[in-house]
Length: 464
View (cartoon, rainbow, N blue to C red):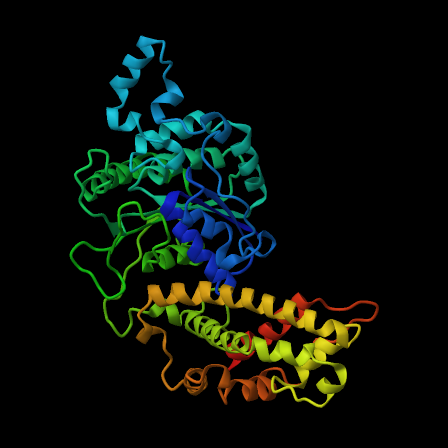
């Protein structure tokens, strides 16, 4: 089985980033292929989605490439909305355009987004939806066992594109197709600019977007989920974020995690009751149970709380190892005789992995440099998951009571590279009798060695 996730607009990318982390942590299976669609591909949000935690394209948990603009980038270039459709030398075209769109819409730079104007998003996408680039992107949907589409009904790109996009996907896939539609999850500052995206505009878009969804889009889908926060009933987890004007980065929110949960729940709900076309998800306001998604196993044997805890432990251990980089490099860059008289507090197994996969002492220093660079990359990947979880959930929800190992490592971290805890834990518990030895006829790379030993830390953390 294989699944496709098609994310549209900024909200869709936020959900895709949540799914990316859940796959990276092991909460969701690695059978999800992502297609991300947004007009602005140069801002921090799409760049983070393309390279989450600094990952290379071949390591992306969702196997994606570039975020795809919903129009012909070469033809549109830096044009404003009106310039895409109006011939400056044809007054009749200008009159027709002004009858359909206001002046603020005309000046929208669509290559930067649709600025909370769904009619602009829908028009731009309708003009470009039959292009070969988009169709080539959607043709692989024919082989997917299920397709999930995610976006908002409140902005410009999601609300303007996703409804038409569903019809385009249906040209290739008549199997199960699920929709995840986000209602407002943020609020915006009030400005005096006439073309500003405001809370009032968002609420107007929501009203019309939900109406269009029920009347036209819902029948095309197997079943759908609508998500938003209850007005006037904010809880510790479920409340709107206030976004700054022009802030184009990621803003983690609990609803993105709930939207990702739809990949698990919607197919199960459809199997249980095929007569239901639209779902909402109830939120438990009991503060003792608000974090129930942390205690659910998702698609793994370990609950999400345990997976987050394992990433936090991995981050802690890798940070410690990297604090000892200079000591490790100095040891392996010394002469062979002097090195033979030294000791390696990181344990015999890591040392065996290094010496087994280098042809001689002279190469060991460079090999260790490469191992440390890869461990730094693994550390960034762990931080990509941990920092998000710590923004979605209050730390008191993530902490596991009576977690002796985590408490011990955190306490040891206060001494930095001189921690008396970390090397004994790694050498005697995690890496013991599990080096990565040379294969017959070949050697393991430094990347292989680094990933092997980091993987043992993660496995131990999940099992502890």
